Amino acid sequence: MAKATTKPTTQATTQATTQATAQASTVRLPRRSPGRPSGGRIIADRSQLLAAAERAIRSIGPDATMAAIAAEAQVTKPILYRGVGDKDALVGALAELLVDRINTAVGAAVVEATSPSDGLRSFVSAYLSVIDDDRNLYLFVTAGGSSDDRVGQALHLADRSAHPIATLLAAQRNADGTDPSVALTWAYGMIGTLHFVTLWWLRDGTLDRDQLTNHLTALLWSGLRGDTRPQGEAS
Amino acid sequence: MAKATTKPTTQATTQATTQATAQASTVRLPRRSPGRPSGGRIIADRSQLLAAAERAIRSIGPDATMAAIAAEAQVTKPILYRGVGDKDALVGALAELLVDRINTAVGAAVVEATSPSDGLRSFVSAYLSVIDDDRNLYLFVTAGGSSDDRVGQALHLADRSAHPIATLLAAQRNADGTDPSVALTWAYGMIGTLHFVTLWWLRDGTLDRDQLTNHLTALLWSGLRGDTRPQGEAS
DNA sequence: CCGACAAATCTACCCGTGGTAACTTACTCC
DNA sequence: GGAGTAAGTTACCACGGGTAGATTTGTCGG
Image 1 (tube, helix red, strand yellow):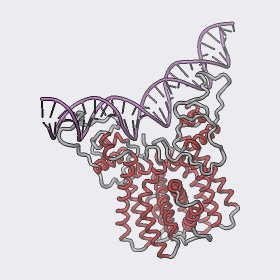
Image 2 (cartoon, chains in turn orange, brown, yellow, green; image 1 turned 180 degrees about the vertical axis):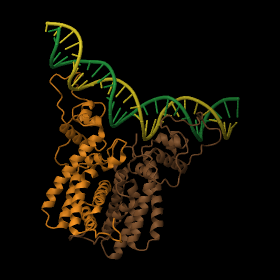
Image 3 (cartoon, chains in turn red, orange, blue, cyan; image 1 turned 180 degrees about the horizontal axis):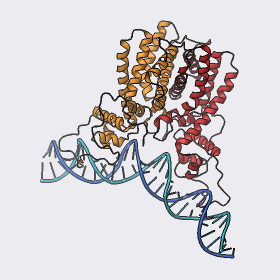
């Protein structure tokens, strides 16, 4: 099957699988018989399903199937599909969750920075830290799409973080008197940089995280303080 | 099915589908009967298969299936699988092809540049031009993987272009006396920038190509002439 | 108190896709 | 002429996303 899978790096927060024997298709639940359940509706709100999805992905890897996720949630597939939409919707929801997590970490790290460049370094460091802990989730979100809308899949995470970044960037450039129209493009560019470098690092991991942080910080730093237009014309 | 598909932008070089009625699974070939063919081996060398794959992808879209590609090549699936390996190998081969194409275009554009920054602009412009023409192929290569090795899939193109770029970059930084150890990281970063911005542009296409070229050139320009280490420490 | 309808769930299935085993035919060499 | 081999095609498998239909329980009117 997969290849990356577990490899317990730091493994924060949510502990691994409850138990659930997530054997994909051959679901082995308490085997409730079909039909309307005895005690009211089943207890599966969206948040629980998402948490279960995260648990499953964390333990199985980015190739976790919908069936496996349902099993981890102690629920059958139709319930899962009723709770979150299809797989794309699930990816979207998890992307949201991951972006929130990154934002939190990044925000916390940045406020206690002493200088702008130090702030950027904290940003990068916090970002890498979250990804390193949630690597399977990260891979699921960035490459887990089911088939069509290939473009949208790859951009799920990016879309959710590009606009805030672009806003910041535009504000800063407005203040500097430099052309702010590049903001959105540059935001996607920055995210692309982080994403690709991170992927490469997750796979080949030749640098340690400190080195990587330094390199990335240097690159983004010099990129961000871009001195307006290099050659001659504007947008 | 897909969503992006054709949209004939400029459509260079290879003309569209021969005809082939590429109906995916229900193959409708001249219906050669099974068994060893009458006149020697079948004529399907790797390069022809790759060309057929490109044709199929170009006309069907990035969701072209192996069966459809085989049909376009006037060949049955096992022949296709014998010629190229599995789908990952096909993606790899096409990635190589696309990288060559980009390199050619980029090289041609860059030599007639008058200044470094103009060279960079030519680089970006040529890159975008190739992608714009071969968008389906590009999407197939960057997101067409079959399932496992999600990381490798996304990096297929990147791996094939990062090292050359890194070499150039390291040489230049050595000449400048700036730290060359960042080269590989920065190379992946640049590619990530190009990739993500391109994806975003292919999907949302709000800027015209000239604007996008300007923005990207400005970003890469300021990023590349990075003044070594911004804060204090080295790698 | 009973029967019909509605609600909620699970099972079993469908479909498409990557990949291959098994069957079929033609050639070749003794 | 027949056994063995080379070359291809068909039919199939496995598996993952997604859903229709069977199945049971609760509810409400008569």
